[in-house]
Length: 243
Image (cartoon, rainbow, N blue to C red):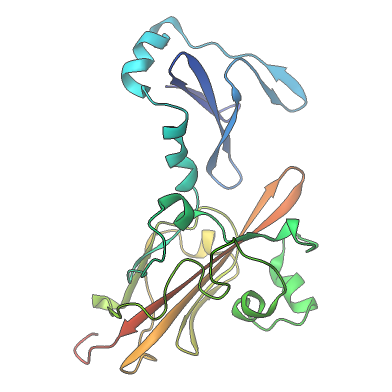
């Protein structure tokens, strides 16, 4: 493994070829780049060569992966809820992690400040936007709940009233609703929820209910802002002894 903080890249060997992973410092995520021999930084081309101590034969033992196997870091640059556990309608890890929609490709005039845009366009909450804006989600996914089943097996409310996800890896607003009550709201959950586990108020759940999770990932890609849609609906069952 060979990397440079200055240029923000890391390269792994796959078979006899070098595969470059581009690190985006703004949103702390990795993406595949071109082959290893060069990269463009700040308008100029930089060439990188691993030191002799990091020869391909050494790296083969450390990173003897096919290019397809390297897809795991990409998927995990996005996010899913872990607790309470969603009832998934797909077994594909890649599909679970991927955004349901990229709104910059669907006619939205995307910008960095989503809250200002939302207010100007008459949406009261992120949920209001997610449920009523006109856009298409990935084929096969449910518009309201993505790849989760709100009518699946109700999950117990977690002890201590916690919620856990894989982490807000990009900027952007998020909301959590329990039934029709908003129990968490953040304009940039990448900053307001730095940990993967955080408490929420489950008290609005009486008997059985559904937890609704929304996140709009905001990323600056290819000289414009990308708005990436994430939604999950998780059936719950309350327990009078849960605090």
